Length: 69
Image (cartoon, rainbow, N blue to C red):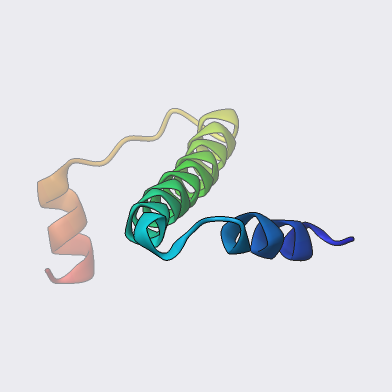
């Protein structure tokens, strides 16, 4: 049995009155997982940038002037 099938069986085991709470719980869980995935992605980008740091720095003003912002 796949994980999807297991989830569906669990959801099917709840009565109709419980389903609004289950929906709220699942949406909250999905948002938490999505946020954790995003945090891991950003952390990996930061780690890569830190590892590749050559010490060069540019001010916000220099950056704006360089790119015409």
